[in-house]
Amino acid sequence: MRNFDHLFDGNLTSIGVDEGFSAYENTQFTRSFMYFAFAAAVAVALDVDDIYVPENGILSRFSSLESGWTTTRTVHPLFVKSLNRVFEELFPDRNIEITNPFLGYTKKDVVNSISNKENILFTRTCPHPRELSQKKDDVGHPYNCGECIPCLIRIIGLVNSKHQIQPDELLLDNNHFLKFNFSTVSAETVAHSEQGRQSSLSVFLLGLNTHLSFAYRIQTSTQKELVSSNPELLDPDIFELYERFSKEVFRTVEFFAAENQTLKDYVIEFLSLEDGELDSLT
Image 1 (cartoon, rainbow, N blue to C red):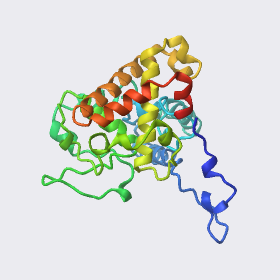
Image 2 (cartoon, rainbow, N blue to C red; image 1 turned 120 degrees about the horizontal axis):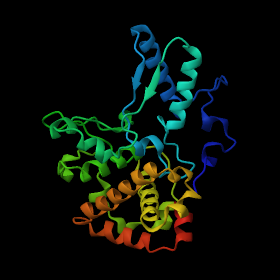
Image 3 (cartoon, rainbow, N blue to C red; image 1 turned 135 degrees about the horizontal axis):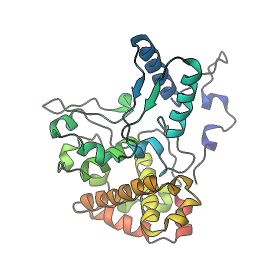
C-alpha cells in the first residue's frame, strides 16, 4: 500500500514553500477545478448549458490505483457530481451540467470510436510535456513519454484497438514493454523503489505492478470478494468496465512478450506470488 509520507517529511521545502514563506502548490491536483471553472465561465458567456469532458472511465475513476499515487483523478464522477451541485447554487436560473460521455469506455473503446487511424497517431496523452523530448516523426506525429500512468493506459488502449497499431507506431520516448530487460529487477525491488518523478522508469514499473495485480484480482476473484476493497465494483457497469480492462492489460503483456521474453518471465513470477505478497508489493 503506497502513501503520501514521502511528500510530508517535515521539511517544508519538500511541499513547496519558498524562502519568503509563500506556499505554492506544484502537484497540479487542482487543475481540473480550474479547467471546469473556465468552462463554466465560457458556458455562461455563450448561453450554453452542456459542458462535455471526454475522458475514458479508467482514467476517470482510477479504481485500479491504490491510495498514495499522486495521479490526479481529474474527472472522477464524484468530483463532477459535486461541481454540478456547485453550479446549481451559483447559476440557479441555468442548467449548466458537466457530462462525461466516455465514462463507460476503456481507452480501447475510445480509440475504436475513431475511424481514422491517422488521427489517432496525431494525439498526445502524456501530461508531462516538459519532460518529453518534443520529438515528432517525419509526418509530424508527436511522441509520448511512455512512462507515466496516462501513457501506460494509452499503450494498453492502442495495442488492444481494432487499428492493429504496431510497437513502432506508438511513438514513445521510452517503450519499456519492448526494450527493458525485466530480468534486472524483481517485484520486491520495484515495490521498494521511489516513485520520484511522475514520468520515470520507476513510475512505469510501479504502475505496471499495480495494474497487473488489479487485473489479476478482477480475473480471479468474485465481485463480492472485490467489493470489500473496491466498493465501486458493486456497480455492475463499473465491474464490467474493469473486467474488460483487465483482459486488455493481459493482452498487452502478450503483445509485447512476443518480442521481449523477459517481460513474460517477470509477469509469470509476479503473478505466482501469494495474494498476501501481492498486497505488499502494490
